[in-house]
Amino acid sequence: MSRRNEMLASMDVDDEEDEMPSIRPSTYGITERQKPTYDMNAISSSSTKPMLDIDELMEAETPECALTQLIRAWVAERGAPVLLEWQGEMVDEVMSQVEEQTKIVDSLKSDDRSTDEEHFQLILVQTEVERAKYVITSYVRARLSKIEEFAQYITLNPASHRNLSGIELSHARKYWRLVETHYQTSILQGLPTAMRGLDDNHNGKSMIAEPDQDTAVFIRARRNVGEVQLPQQSIQLEKNDNYLVRYRDVAYLIASGAVEIV
Amino acid sequence: MALAAHIKHSLTPSELHFIATSEYAVEIVPNFSMGQIRLLSGIWGPFRPPAKAKVPLWLALDLKRRKRCAVVPPEWLTVDHLQEKLKDETSDGQYADLPFRYLEISKAIIEVAGDDLDNAAVIRSLLMDIRQARQTKSREGVLKMNDTGMAMTGISQLEINELRPFFVQSFGVMRKLGGAHVPANAAQSSQSQSQSQFTLDEDGWDMSGI
Amino acid sequence: MDFDSFYSIDSILADNQKVPSEFLTDVPGQGWLQGGLDKDIKEGAKVDLPYWMSSTLALSEYDFLNLSIPAAFSTRVSNALIASPTFVKLANLNHFWYSFGLRISDLLEDNLKLQQSLRLAFSRRLIDIFDLGQYEGNVDEKGFETEFKAGMDELEKQHNQ
Image (cartoon, rainbow over all chains, first blue to last red; front, side, top):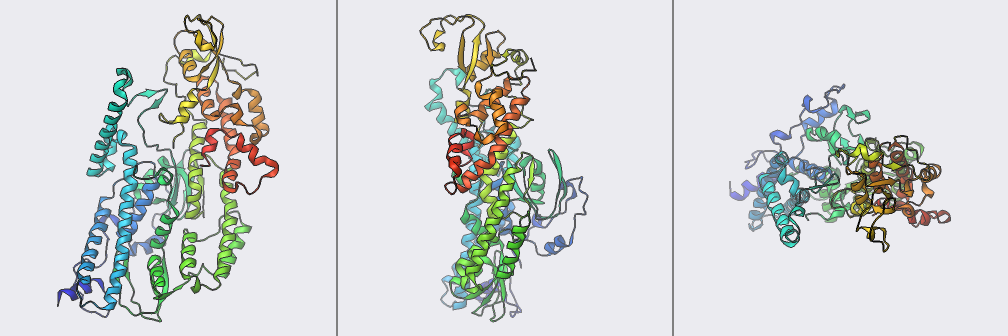
């Protein structure tokens, strides 16, 4: 079988073709961590409802692709006041898929034996690849914006590091060093020593910008969660329910994937 | 700064359009024949007219723009169904049951594939009426605003996005003004002494703490 | 986002709002604070001092000052707010009415009434602030909208940006 056929087969999985030499896994993007989890510990311990229902079982059969998950991670990052956990595996998965698709597109494009139908498929593949790139950069940008806003806080608080990727942490440190040096050389050097601090407290207000966990977020339940305790009430959170709540009160549900930020 | 301040805590309409067209799948009737195609979002097709095929909305709109298919309107995007929903919307205090991204989806379909809808003009005006009826309910949310948690059952994504800046800010202000407010100067040991230094003002402010 | 953070200009401006203060001791050389030509401040002198200064002096271990509650937070105002929250022109009382109010409440032992007043004003005016943003220019019953808008405090104004 020619190289050209091999590549086409990997893209065109028509049932009519019995033999399908595969250069890729048969479906994209179902990595270990993305399988639906039913981690009881991650869900409110006071939950009274059984965690499995028909809807969930149905959904479990068609797991989401990595791209869909990354879109959700991007939206969550935009809505969350804090920096959420870096979804490295998800990004890597989408990146490698994009790379593979791009490789196939490039070689089929330069092959003048490609048919019209193949050319048409390539256009569609390319369109989606561009969309995937947009999601990746949007996700990274959403994080970068918070990383720079809270660069000082991140630099000073090792506990915040676990949610950052290696290069994000290094960016945060370098960024804060730049800002600090700029403040020192342009303004603070000219002030008395006691007034040069950038991490002081004034009237109970810290100079260090810190993510506010009490910021309100709009959430949507992705499955039946059951009872959730809020400051002055307890609520029954069922699938597709929307709430406006403090981020702090539902952070554990966001982390477990039971609810999403919308 | 990586993101402009005004979009930092909200999504833009074009971002919402992107998300809806990625997430939502719709049926099409292709006018071309093609085997299955494997994309990042899944395996789609085969495309064998006159059989219907289910594809992501962005793909459906892309094919429609190339005049390669007709979009099959979702069952909720019909005059009958929307009339029903409008009735629910005006007779009940709850938001009527519509897809979470109904506005983004319907706007995209009407714009690109309006000719595939039965009576697109009526559908458009029904959607506007529904939207207006729902705005009254969003207003109820303002009246119930608090700083601990608020149910917004049935609200759609675009509506959330429109309310987000106002609601998130109000929520934050309420929290600061709330009864649980911890005085910023509480840490200062001399505070108890200072409190007795307030005098009764001429308007007779209740100073029972003295 | 946070209206009361270190780098918030509104927070700095709120710190500058004046608190009626009475000096309990002579302060030589600081007469300029009274705005006149006197060289010294005499015991018993009544001066409006910015919050950041008056609170620092009042909270110090010496009895420098007696503070009075600013008129913007008087019982008269709180009664008016209870009666008709949207007709009170907060901006005429103080442009940073809420932020300044919180600061005053920090200095009071019995601050419940003031806090209730702040919260009540905000929650009952909120719907009008919302409507202003949603329907601005559409309806203006007897000029209510214009009047209300003119009386909005800085924090309320930010809601519609």
